Image (cartoon, rainbow, N blue to C red; front, top):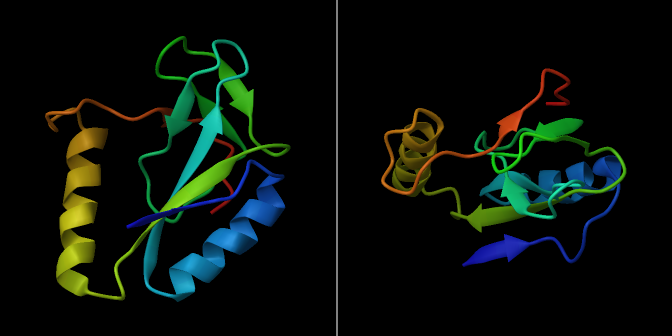
Length: 111
């Protein structure tokens, strides 16, 4: 079952919370709400947090340092499950997944 951050919060706070989920065997994905169109977005690179994100709906670039969130898939460290998730994410990033692509981060990554 996915874990969702309780709320959007400053990037530094969210990154610390996500790090705890990663330490427990989770795979995290940063989330944000586009400041222009209001659509909720999920980054497609696991365990990576960015300072900005580009909306896949309208193309607007939103600053994520003041407010973002994340979702975590808790795998319990099961490598097979982690590999399946990584493949699905890779397929989505390359447009080969049946459910489309994910929003694009901008070059200002935090990692």
